[in-house]
Amino acid sequence: MNLSQRQEKIIEIVKRDQPLSGEKIAEHLGISHATLRTDLSFLTMAGILEASPKVGYTYTGVGIEQFLFDKIFSVKVEEIMLSPLLTPQDTSIHDAITNMFMYDVGSIYVTDKEQQLVGLLSRKDLLRASLNSNLQNTPVAVVMTRAPHLQTCTKDYTILEAGAVLLDYQVDSLPVVSEDDPKKVIGKITKSRIFNYIMQQAKQTETNR
Image (cartoon, rainbow, N blue to C red):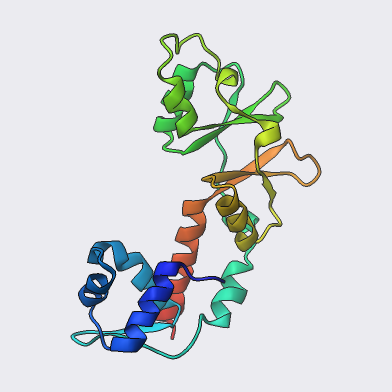
């Protein structure tokens, strides 16, 4: 697993000047301590840094634990995927916007009469569409991202593989489709779902040490 440039810089700073408080690390990087919290939590839970009260962060001299990679990143999408929100392609933009905020989702998958995937609606799609003065009568098919341009995955993808697709194509979610029918949506996986799962498992690993 690759660390981000900022995480690598944090490790470099701590190795050089340890022990260091979170505030001092943030000062070295020229950013706020709040911005660093996620990175520091990840590096601590991964076993790369150690945090001691009233002392600060020190470098442990180890890399990311093999346990984290083997047990967490090889988990299949089907184990953590979410239920998808589907809508017919003749749904009005107005109703789609209402549903998106009612169910608090970042994307809606659009299907035809046979429940086959034909497109995706993102918040960006609906934000652009909201400039239309006829939201009640304009179907989502007019503004959706169409199927040929969609990235999907199957339930047998690992979360590492799914995460790579999400990052490579700079999208927030992937429809999880049936292996037997690539247009049948059976779930969805998102950046936030993967991140939350990794953090939950990392925290549990730290607790069980």
